[in-house]
Length: 225
Length: 167
Image (cartoon, rainbow over all chains, first blue to last red; front, side, top):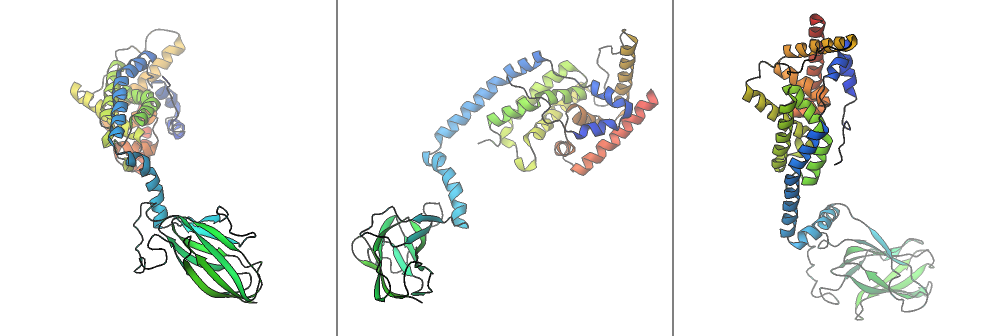
């Protein structure tokens, strides 16, 4: 039995007792303390109730669907995130294998998919069925085809499920030779950023292709000098 | 699921059983009755844990409220609401002169407490026997904390005056 006494005693009590002047200590002395025998009896009397309460609570938990007890905490955390807070997970897309030596500096910023966080599913676009790779393939769009030197090319994407794409940036006139990079995309929405810090100004062919070879994006882009 | 789970109720019980007993004993002036009422209060509290509303206060103050109702039930049952005789124990029993004087002074405080209104005695018991803060008293009595603070101040002043007059 672990009793904790006096933990909540309000320090302001002394001030109020002082208001009684010489009678304060007498009032304090009148306070009755429980005997250890009574506390032991009380404990024995209540233990049956407590044991029954714990058993009932366990039984109630067992009756709940498994997904409610196991997944609900995750939903409770994820739903507010989907509602307002975008948790940007920056993944250096190095998990996939490069198709050639060297590296195209691509990073992925992703937000959790609505389905994964318990929110409403994002509406499918009208062209979901007709887009390359079908409705399950990621949809990728180039945000701007011209960037200043040092600024990244940004592509937005929506991936119904986790997958990967291949990103290549090849010089058309001038510019630097680059490589093709496989980039893993988590399910959900996000952005791909292609850093241009190490690239020369000029025109490039930007291609984002799906694993089946179809192009999700094919555009001529330019890095301004 | 109950608003207070068994484990949390047990914590409240272990933290406040002594204070609740002291509070009830202060209300009843009868150790034996206080023991039974304290036990009844915890049994009631445990059965009613599903009705606890956290928006209305802390479990400890809620438990004190249940103990208060149980004590008031006991006082009504005995018809002792208006008059609270002191315990049979003889607090002025013979002994060393300083002890006898201390007992006499406590007797003065007891008689002064008897002069208080039932609500005022409740306040004294909640504050000085139960050790509740003004905010907790406010929760138990369903009044504002400011009001509780003012009432405690007034009853302390009244009790001191009564003690001074009886001394």
